[in-house]
Length: 110
Ligand SMILES: [Zn+2]
Image (cartoon, rainbow, N blue to C red):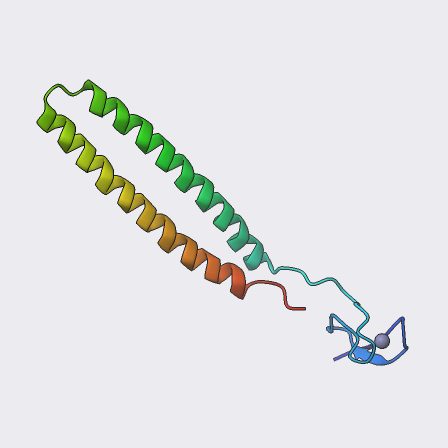
């Protein structure tokens, strides 16, 4: 492992070190790995997609409810919408937890 001199205190530090061990001078900025970046964008994209799905699902469901004639049909559509919404929220929360964990694990170390 190559050594470099800290610009602040001239102590020899590893070139892989982010900070000088002696004076704490920041030698390099921590960067996310490519995998970490992918995870981060997946996390953002996933949330947008789920939000869009939720809004699209709700607006189409409300159209079905107002169009159907009988009360039984309306109730059925409402229950279906409720189950669908719970399903979407469930997938949303589970996906957020998994992607959130990955985001934490790939976070740059300081
Ligand atoms: Zn130093």
